[in-house]
Image (cartoon, rainbow, N blue to C red):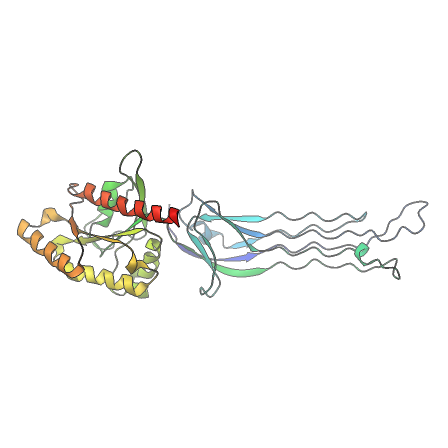
Length: 337
């Protein structure tokens, strides 16, 4: 399945049905009077978040959505049928913006959420509505009200408990594959991962969490370099960030500072999120190199540094436990709020 995290679509709610001009025509009823019915209501445009979707790729091929018009009225005071709602299903975590991408119209961050974005037009009045004491046979009936229409942008921000961040080729995809059932592409060159991946990490029978792996970030990511601003949006909703650093590449402090600078410049509360710093690829370092780089990183960040080898699994269990503890604390805080 191809991944797409933003799309522009056109929406139009249904027009209201027309009212009609009609009169009661019956034998022996000399002055039957007007009995034209009202038009029916046009269909609404409704968005619904569902759990079994994780991409907006369908909106690349279908970009125009138009609800049906309400039914016209009829004689004998019959009101036209209301048009059904047009329900557009989107993944959980989808945000809807206006055409300028400046105003958020809706944020569907929970399964089963429904929002009426555009309301259908009201039906027009039939001539029975215009009967008065002085006008007993009105011939006026109204057209239905037009529906609303607009272009909107859909943006998907994945819902995950923890997010993997780091420079390209830091071993994020290898880590994700080792700890979950995800099967991302892995190779020994930068930007192997081209779009976000999700994996479910199961620690035991009662504890599990969703881990998001985004493509590697580079300097200037918050400004859109390398599509970094779009990728960072996928970890905005995470409770904790797992900052993976390639220990074998050297310059670990510079690597850490590059990512921290991008998180702070992007905003969205990313720099305030709990961060677990992990030095990866310890199998490619001598004990002396590992000790020196770990100490330098701890001094620069002021945080505890964990070490792992994603390929052999050394130290991975301890990192997962640390992630789960932070996630449990965040869930407890939300429940108590």
